[in-house]
Length: 459
Ligand code: ATP
Image (cartoon, rainbow, N blue to C red):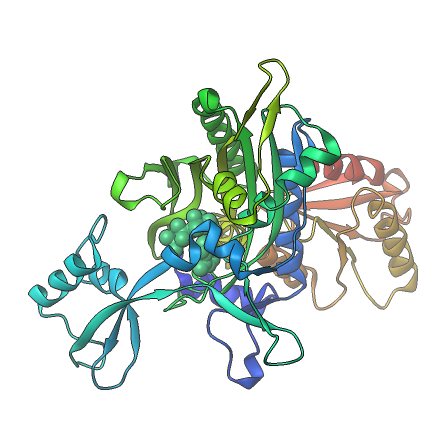
């Protein structure tokens, strides 16, 4: 079904996935807080990414670099100069808008346009602000968050919260070379926060000021970049499938010369059909030797690789798969969200892949006032927790309500312990009811068989 952003926002808040940041103080635009189910979902997405992009490969090195980096890093990377968005303001109220977004909203594609061209297009259309006022002459706005470090004003150092995780890897290139002596091609992988002072954070977790990225910097010899680019393209597609992003809603868009970032010779954006339109989910970029050369130059520490066979120093080129966690989560939630009829009632169900579901199974005693049922159900839960720790407990309300609550958070299995489990019907002793989220179907299985089913679903 097609889901609206409002439906996702409402479910996310109601069921403890995502809350507006600092909500009791009126919120802070572009920030969100994550409740238990959101944390679990994000952790599952991250763990799978780490496994596929880093851990399972022999040529990848994991890092976790500092979030604060000196200004010089961002000068070298080009961010202080070019990490800008086009800004226009309301001439009367001063409210700020992103010029390219204003044009998009009016049905004009700003791709490839300069600031002046965008401004002319806005004027030609006679566009007005939301308050009905004129726009003021545009400027560019830098997205980096500056921080001043140090106890005294005079000796304070200007630093920036990182605008992307990538730079944390480039500055550690030499450390990895010196500590591990890897052979080309090899890469570094990192998961962590990044900060962007977006002019207009919007669309829930789609455009944030504090976000999290999963990035790889894969170092290759200049001749072999095309093969590596294709390889990472394939890995990104498989990851999408594994976490439940349907490929028919994922579009690979080749970015033209005029729209690529300053460092990139080729970029493919993975666009997803989000509830608010088809937009960038992830990016894959060929960054050439731009980053290592610039950091070599700006830091005075040459960032080179010594090719033992050719006996020469080379500056490796870089392929970068870059994935935002929150957009990934939003796509996964949008793809999984469904409403159907079950037992004559409408229900909301998240058809999440078991691997990413925050809760893998829920165990429930048929009646909560029968100590023998409760005790047996606790025993079953402890047993299933050996398969996976995310096994929930619910003994509130009737069984139907308990199932619905789990459907809403995407729990693939519910297990009910009844008097037959205790041996009331001798043949059924130590069997339980296993209920499947997607169909609502129930089957009677031994506790061992249930454990095996959960194990298989998570394999
Ligand atoms: P956009 O054009 O949408 O601003 P971008 O091209 O600047 O995105 P990149 O710099 O390529 O994005 O960042 C890599 C990934 O990080 C993106 O594909 C996206 O998943 C995520 N990302 C970037 N900016 C944001 C943001 N403000 N909020 C949430 N996720 C983001």
